[in-house]
Length: 313
Image (cartoon, rainbow, N blue to C red; front, side, top):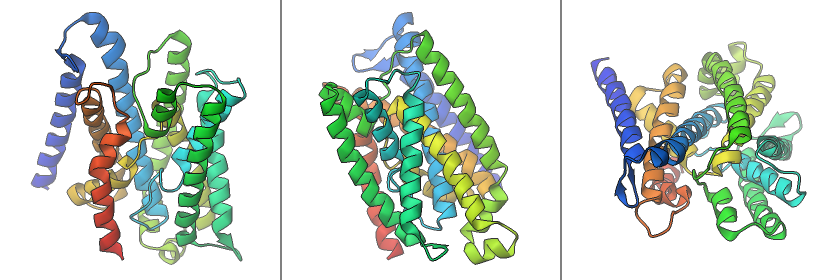
């Protein structure tokens, strides 16, 4: 109990420290210019906090409902589907930041629909098939996204940032309004999911155990997929598809705070937020040009993924 309190304290301390450090530190060193701090760095810290937190939260949900430690929004194709939706909006000339989350959500829902139905056979959902279908759909939509972005004549860096994540967004009045609205909805969905922590605990024990405890498996699965798709789509529409956060953070959270979803969900959110803020700090300071965030998260996440793969074979 005491060690848990120390870990929680260190988590909050680390989060506060890196938020403050990121506010004043950039590629050119420390800067206390009011315009840079408030109009450039503060928005990207807020975006990184929400993107990292939501992706880690979503990863914890997906790992629980599918009883698979290798699940995350990227592997299941949801993030790629959301990016596909954004690119489709660009191609049809209908996309502004007001409609971006809508297109992203439609893309993520399409992905889940395809993955779920590909894995649904004879009245049952094959969880291994969900993973395999998600990987295939993820690669497919990532390729189509690049194709659509090229056809819509978007700059190469914008294509890369959509697929690999970037927090360099300058908010205007309309962008800020839609950002606030969509994230308020996401917060409501997070609260709804947190209220179903008992069901997630049941899922993690196995489908049969969950059903024996009164959980309607298919109904709950569809609800979690729907809510999670919106949460992921909201973040991808503004920050792009950031890989590995939804995979590695829930595992670290379980190791530090236990497997009860009452703790896994909120601490995954906070730890995911911390990791993306740190990754963004590296992405904009270690190279002559700003790097996509996924380059940083992949550098650390890929070895962890290989470890998980070897451990679960």
